[in-house]
Length: 255
Ligand SMILES: [Zn+2]
Image 1 (spheres, protein in one colour):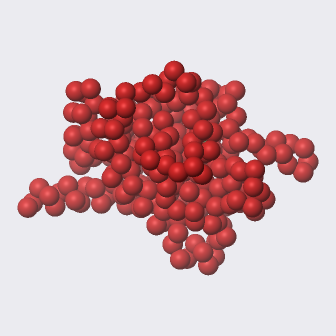
Image 2 (cartoon, protein in one colour):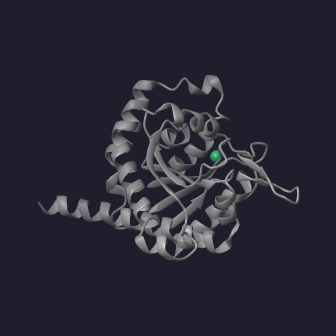
Image 3 (cartoon, helix red, strand yellow):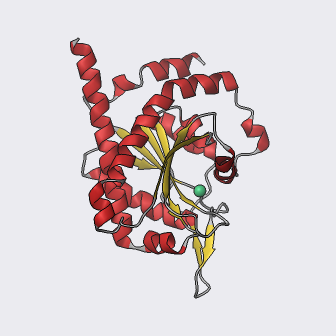
């Protein structure tokens, strides 16, 4: 407990003066395929494959900003949620970004969402929570809620800001007018109790890039140009967030 609190207080002191460490987490993997959708030719699209591609592209785009970027998995393998979160500790990561694709029985549901961890969520979101938390066993859920609350209190404002920076880049007016992101609906920033975000114990967001169950979204996800543009915007949002944190830290010192 003491270690966690110490870590949270030193959160911002770690970024200044060095490259930021970013841990990207492509969701699912191995036996956990995530959402799926059958193509007309009978082939099966799997969330676990597509989010790995996207994570690699985001890593590539972040490399232009000189940050140190790591992936929780580089290939198709099963990794438990708590093991993924533990990697953030081992790397001393500044931020944690989990990448997923949404899915709904309602085929018309479409668009992208950005989540940050919070203990309050509504009924609509609890369906998604159960999907993304699925590999987390019932007994694993007995996290000490006192510790969980401390973590959320300390990290949620940062996570929310990180989400806002990424959301702003994805929703630039120019994206709506032209280019591969045109037509991608913005469903906004939401909070939910995603265990992987909570357990990472640092500013963390979960990207639900688009709906695999929606025809138009699916088409976009499969386009290389979309993947590249989406990754570029996410990288730019992350970079701007890191810059703003560093600037506010310097400003507070000069007061
Ligand atoms: Zn997922």
